[in-house]
Length: 172
Length: 282
Image (tube, rainbow over all chains, first blue to last red; front, side, top):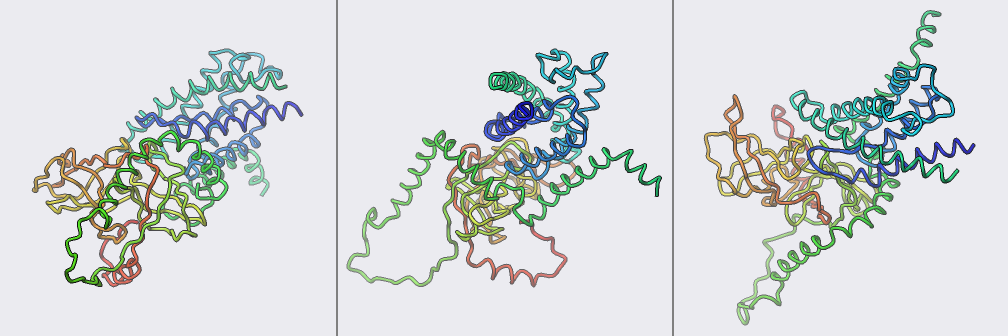
């Protein structure tokens, strides 16, 4: 029960963080920082895919509800949730995931986190900006937005990740 | 039948993914072009309340700029007061003016949520149907135009700002009288584009751009910005005119919703225009 509460608290906290802080942070050059995919990424390893997809779709709709993006966040977070098990499998340790560990840097190492979370964020951001602009003529602009935003989102997610994890450790 | 069930079971994850993805993208496309209700937008009461609470904190950061802007406007209005004018007609004939009647009314509003760097930027205002705001009204600030009301709920409304893909407000360059449509390319929130001006006419740099008032949403002469660059479009006899917006949408907070009392009359008259005309985008 404590475990469920812990995951729920993390999930809620990350969405709130996105809505209250990162939605209002606009550094220009088309950069848009999106850290909320972390809330889906931090769910347990053995989570089955259908609840995972429903949960990410719901979380995306919640973000859409507060930021006038009309289903774009839901669409890209759903893709994130759909691809997460595939990438987790691709970069799994030789004898599978330890059920006691969590998908965080401290448990799984920097290289693993960088590869799985980095690729997923790249796909998520590209999908989001592609459907936001939706013009082949602006393809370079989509790439510029994607690459700049992914770097900043990844760094913010790293910082937030350590923050959220230590917070929950102290609580439980 | 068994094959079909086996197929469904085999690909159920992918099918669910496609199904949810279609819902999300359908919402995206349909809300952008045909806003039917306020579900999933910030004009919804719950999310608007949340944003308003947030704005109660955030508004204090730009307080000084806003105070200066309001003060400047106050001075302009004060100069129009009777007490700050010298009465020349004293003892002369008094004319009761019946030649001018009210055509536009204004509703003051505050922006409680806004973005400027997305491809389509919407502003949420704290006025709604109960204040007489509905879809299609214009919004401007004391420096320039802001956008057009996109959806209104009971106490809030969403404004499709000039920083969106298909805003198409008709604007003209002052003095020369050339007119075209305002567009935004999604890159810099200070710079817009004026399209549809033929390039055999010269355009002066820094000439003022104002609204044309053709669609009846805005009166003529609300400032938009200044021309900073005019380049020929490749392969077409047209200018690509860049406009520096006179309003800085990043720090904008206080706006006015403008209501044209003659708009229903204008619309019903324009319905008699034959069909082959291109429809004007709201």
